[in-house]
Image 1 (cartoon, protein in one colour):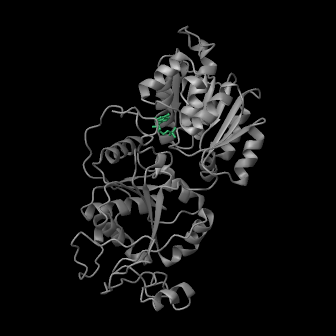
Image 2: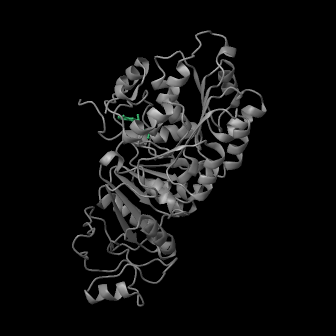
Length: 479
Ligand code: AMP
């Protein structure tokens, strides 16, 4: 299928060609015709599937039919509202809107928190048919009357499940109350919980359900590995894996902002170019570290779930769960950043005994058994009670799921390298020449590290990155 066959207008086809897309992604071929026809849509799609163009292109076409070329702000009321959970996603969506609308006489604006509100007020005053916003700041603008939403024709709620996780649903309901009842509504979510369905019931009318990946499933091109480890050794194991597996670009997830900064700092002290991205970083810092990660100056980006939401990073090969996510669905969100568009990706989880319950829930959700890989010096004592453990011992292998040794500094032990069962992920040999006989001494700085962590020196900021080939080869023009 081609974009022409989807019924898009020449101005949009030109913009799509400029972006380098030659064929629509599955969500685009499924969503564009019904959205063009004015239907409400409930879309099950993650970031990385091309969903933004899937809703933006048809909505632009719908409002372009009555676009106003007058320079008067009053002639440019908000007609499409795109609500996103995070600033990153809002910025990213706005970049897409600008790119696709470049040949149309439409104005757009992006409003999000954590930035001075005044320039946003100015931008809104000039008039914008398309507004991309995060919920909190949008409500600020509504309260301050710097935005009117009474002429909105279409609403997009992007990453609704994340809105729910972040506690934005009451804000979203307030926003819904400010919109005309007679409008088109689209809701996108990577996962569908009961709460999301409830929200969909209140905001969508006779929606068409479009799903590009099965619900609560992960891409099949992703290999999952779990490395059992004592909690106290996680950081050291992480540094070891980065070196020994020669991980060139890894996104590491941690549970808290504080932990995020601490871990990034530890890695920097270990000589690994790492940066941190979390909610307490300024917008400028986030953009800089993200750019450095994309261009390879920063090898490891340590992130909280909230900050990492919606990050679009080309062909990310590795995602590492340093802390287990609080809800198993977040595992899917996290690893959704790798294995995109059929490319291979690897999801690594460092699981200490305390994480085992959460990890089991993830396995249940994915309906797969993720085999454990043990690493010399980091594995735990064999479990005595587990049948699987007994079976492994009978085969002379070490079982990773031993009793908790939380807080203990486990001295390195001479353990013969394990060969996993055939067909399952095999431990890879350490290639770093690391001296394992040295006792583990966490650096005092790493332990005492508070919030301020900076990454390796950042390169000068580049211009806008090419957006053409971010779907990992899908629909790309041959270069
Ligand atoms: P999204 O899931 O909307 O965040 O899109 C992920 C990335 O894919 C973005 O960088 C888009 O520019 C890119 N993209 C969207 N549609 C296509 C397409 N049809 N062909 C190639 N790349 C695309």
